[in-house]
Every structure is written in C-alpha cells, then in structure tokens.
Amino acid sequence: MDSLVEGSLEWTPLVEDDLVELGELRQAIEYFDDPLERFTLEDLYDQFQEPEGDPSANGVVGRDKGGTIVAYGWNRIRGIETREPRAWLDGGVHPAWRHKQIGRRLLEWQIERALEWYAEVLVEDPTITRPLWLGIHVDQKSVAVKNLVARSGFAPYRWYFDMHAPFFDEAGEPVPMGVFPDLGRVQLCPFHPALSEQVRAAHNEAFSTTPGTHVVSRATWEHTLARSAARPEWSWVAMEDGEVVGYAMNSVYVANWEPQGFSEGWTDRIGVRPGWRARWIGPALLQASMRSCRDAGLQGAGLG
Image (cartoon, rainbow, N blue to C red; front, side):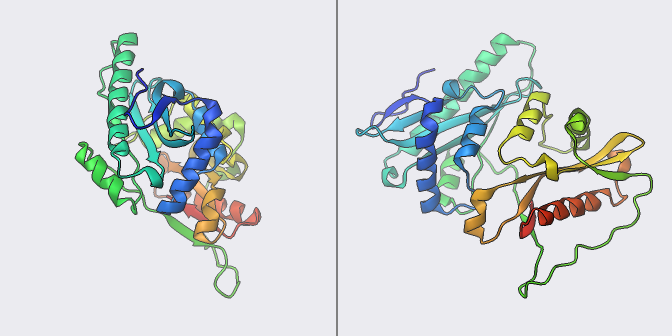
C-alpha cells in the first residue's frame, strides 16, 4: 500500500495510537459541520477492532508540519467471509485545511486502495465472482461532500430516515405505548448470548430478499454485540416452540444526545422471518424495546 495521498501533508498508515488524535479531529469536523450522526472515541476503537478491517492497510492519516492530524481516509472493509467484497469509505479534512483539494485527492486514494484490496482478495480466492461494491455515507447537511462523491462517479443508492418516540409529552406526562393483540404461541423473551447464532440466522433470512442488503457473518455479528454502544441486555427475541422468529437488537449512542436535546435508546436491527409476518410481532418487539429504554431512565427511543 502506498500511503502517499498528496504533497501538502505527511501521510502515514492509520495505527491504533492515532485514534485519540483522530477522535479530536472528528470532534472538530462535527463541531463545524453539525451532522446528524456523531461518534465517540469508544466508537473509533470499536471500528478499529472490526474483524475484517485491517485499518493499517486500508487507512491513512495526514499531518501538518507541526505533526497534528488534520485529515484521514479509512476504508471500512466488509464481506470477505461471506464472499461479498465491499468497502465503506470514511474520511474527513479539518475545516481549516479545506479548499486545498485534499479531500478530492483523499477520495481518489481511497478508491485506488479499495481496487488494490479487491485485487488482493481475488488472488487469495479466485472463485469470488461478485464485483467490488463501494459506499460512502453522506449526511444530508454535507452538500460539499455530496457534490464531491457525485463527481467521483458515486450515485444515490439508499436513504436513511430516523424516527423518534418520546416517552413523555411536553407536560412531562407519560406517552402511552399502545397495546398489541395476543401473539398466540409466540413469546417475547430478553435476548441471551446463547441465542446469538439463531438470531443472526433469523436476521439473514429476514433480509435475504431485500435489495442492497448483505449477509452478516458470524464474526461481524459477534463484534457488533460486543461494541461499547451495544445493549444486548435491552434487546428482545420472539420465540415460537423454541425457534427464533423475530428479534430487536438495541444500542445507545450517547454522542447524539446533547445535539438532539434528549437521551434515547436505539434499535439497530429489527426483523421478522417471512413465515411469521403480519402477526404483530414486529410492533411487539419495538414496544418491548421501548420499555427497556424507558426502564433504563432514557427519555425516548429511536429507529432508523
């Protein structure tokens, strides 16, 4: 991997010792850009430990003459284990260093590195036939980033919408959560690690026919549950005759609370297997998740 991106900064591979300073850079970027989604230092460490990532081979940081990190590019690798090679391209430039074409060259480097990585994957496993998929998450406020990635050949592919459910109204009174019909033989139970593999299989089945989704490998699934933001103890599973038929996996993203003005839990993944749909299992799982968040002392629940 050639870590040289352009000539105005000193570029080196991303290493774990860079994460604290990288976190400070991202805070500066978030303060200036005011995005909807924010990240903590713990999130960075979680991302660095992703099972397929190899950040030092797929990420770089750029330092100014004083040695301060002012730019970074990080290809978040996915799909090796499931034979669906893809990469999310994450990056940023300090506001004081923008308008110097660093972001454009950084994105070019990331695309080149992703193609290089894909060629390496094909050498290791020539039976892989899926083309490389590249994605970039663009906040709705980031018009400059949207224009940059569009000029680089990227096209809109998926939109994310957030929904929020407050637990109390403006007068401080509890908001009713609603009552759902009897689920019959289906029972809701708290998530337990012993059910993890069954829930993962249910998730992959639930989204197997959804365009644009990918199989979640066991290693990635377990890493997700071990993240600092994950709250498996707030999560729920729907069971029928000892079989997992639905699930709601929950987390908490503390970095978003102050900007949005309230605390909330978050449902990262929710699904019901095809043979059990239209039986109110999904709403019941959401209701159980909301109660977990309320019992934890939070002010609301969120869903993407």
